[in-house]
Length: 387
Length: 249
Image (cartoon, each protein chain N blue to C red):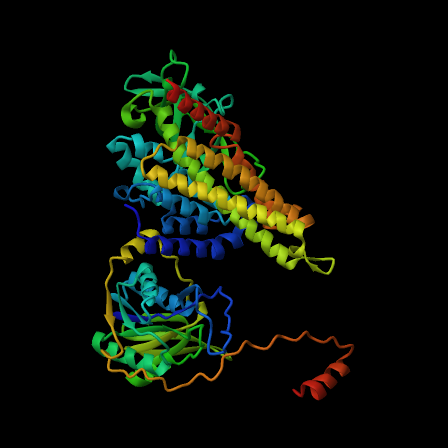
């Protein structure tokens, strides 16, 4: 049910205060220690952030897409590692169950994911499988009533702390493509699961990823999401439509923060007897960043509204994710440029966020994959007009 | 135990306050407003009393324009059970507020009224004390610690010389200082629930209080710009300047 404006505004206000009073002051510590303090995680649970998109009947908030992007935009005025703590529960880690799960699966997992008691992780990527996501090699072999998982997953966000994994695995070896792939919900303490050591990433310190290896990992038959083989990949793609808008909103929130940092620095820093904000070449950078953010954010909000109205948003979602992630890259680069030498020093948010935002052009589909999604959809549409 | 918590809608503590060009007051047009931070601490303390089982009901009160409802919604989202809104446009002086609160106290018969020690807009620091005077109740002001056992309250007050411990009997008035607690952030589920909680509306006339101003604001001005400091070369020079220029010793 959509929230009335006053309620949403009050929540976004509260969230912004949480960002300014709690998260931003903790950014340097998180970057240095590679850990989000437990007290902050607990406060995020209290605020309801883990259950943003999980339906109310399962203890979540059941936000609409439009509401979700506003929340994502607001929270990412702080370093994105904070969002990452609950990001998988909100998006790819829970939505597969929300969309396709059986009643039993929903009842078993969603309330715990909504409260943050469970951290979820989405395991699709493999050592040889990145953008070519349909070619999943991890196998789920039928064995009695259950399945046996074998294979390795790579760069799995939140895996070191996850209680449950949504695992994409091939159930049909004859079927080479996506149609042979099914989705399973697997408890992290199942014997036969081994975690790799957390990767030493370029940015987003405090958010952890690692390999997840399945070795004769026996799971029950009711771990198959929706109880149907061969729909897992399709579900993943549906989840990604929404996920891409969420990521695009995240890029916009970070861009807006970087612009704040840039403007404030330009107002304070003096060179040649005046603040650098007086120089037109600096002004040009500020203006470009502001304009590009506003364009991206308008695209995200429009796509969210259209999606809610029932329009297909696969192409729009790809456009939003493509443009917003490239945009925040440029904005971060200008922010560093405006900061001069200080922009290369990790004490300044511009330097830290510059590293943090680089991932956005890579995950949930690289920019190049988004371009393909967009162009293929355009060609398909044009062909169907001719036929 | 019933607890009343008066809350005031003030300019947000992050906003840089600007004086109107005609010096008649502070510019409030398009300025972000929030709950007075000391009142947030008061609400938090009352809600904690309820969570601890000491209090049974927490009632938030605000006096001011239509938008004061939003301030009350915040208190309700933090955990207050219901709210009373005394609708009034224009200024209210501390004595009027205290008189209206005294009337509400006589109707609601709470055991405790917890207030912020002062509001960050006019910094009057009077309402709690005036209310205690009007009701003839004991008061613990500027408290940084609170313990309630049976009918006895023990509070730690932040005073100029350090900390002072005071014992009080219920019913009582408490005004809270900054270090008493750290207020919670209202969660979205609680914000949604708060929308359904009751806000009773009253007017100053209902409470029998005359709101004709007794004070007249002559002029509001920005504080003078701070002058840069001076460097001195020796202690003798410092003493000389303090004596002859500043005239403070």
